[in-house]
Image (cartoon, rainbow over all chains, first blue to last red; front, side, top):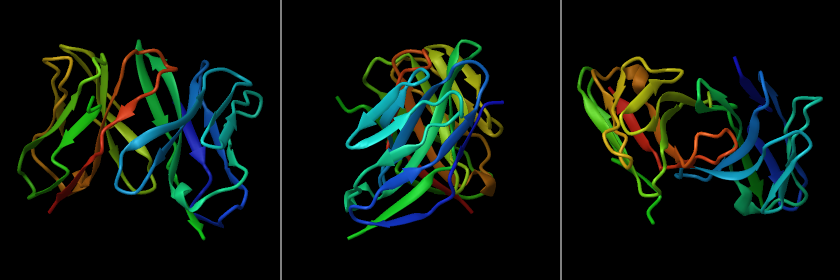
Length: 114
Length: 114
């Protein structure tokens, strides 16, 4: 079945460092790809998405490009802030029997130190 | 516009007790789903609904029941709680079944079964 694999956490960086969180996927068909973020004590919220190959999603300084040839959707940010500390989930969405199914990676906890 | 709301925020149950986790959305979304979040495992789909009167099983449905009598509400029932059901539960909704559409998440219910 479809699956998503994220880099193991936790990840700890200093403020203004460059961030990469790796995400690869296995899927039949042509899924949409998402990054969701979960701040402490809250539910998940969409950070960015891409719906087809070579699309780049971006939001709040974060970017990810849908790479069909490497089945990847790595999350990057050029200069992280303390407020970026959160858990980040990579996910794919596909239509299965007419219904949308989101499949999540295990999540990567990111801590940014001042 | 409250989005997706969940009650209660926290719950402690004894093994064998039953309870209902409430979920409501005010966005007129047709698609709703329940996930559980466990450490190191991301989110896993329990049940979902593509509209009032229509529900189906997700990846981990055993021990849970759902019904969807209105567009707004999608309660999750634990029939006989077990320690393995200790988890954080998230309800989500989406306004379309298409795979590219964002799911909106509630704040979660943290359940402990002793």
